[in-house]
Image (cartoon, rainbow, N blue to C red; front, side, top):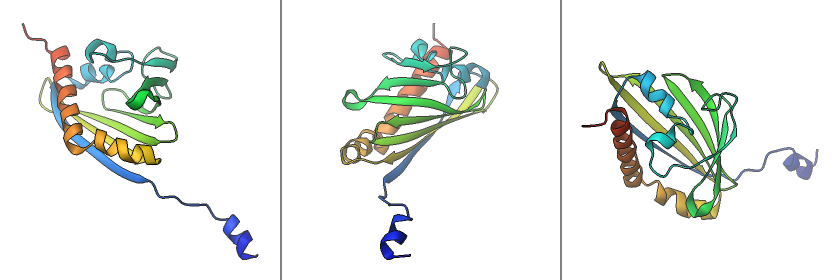
Length: 164
């Protein structure tokens, strides 16, 4: 086999940038109350300004292999699919940001104390374009991610246990 043939039989590599953000927080509610809210349809109830376009779901809500679309940074379409669906315990989405980036969003729920749920929100980013390598790490800096998680925690708590 010539060197040219040998090179053609090997994959080309272009290493992408990868980073992860994780936050664990508590919300007022049992896992069976929290889990259904981690759904693109139900998020309209508790995330102000949430918007998506459902592309596929047999049940009409989150389920394994459901597909929906959002518009994110710079008005770019993001395609989401549910890759793991374990009611009241774990949900995982794969976000496809065109050819720019992939995000694996994993959310684990565990009953912390009676009536409280510990939420572990993990986002694994793989950045593949020059544009995304400038935008995504800044948008999801540790400080910005922590602020986003505090906001989500507050939104969930206000919905699950409204005061008054």
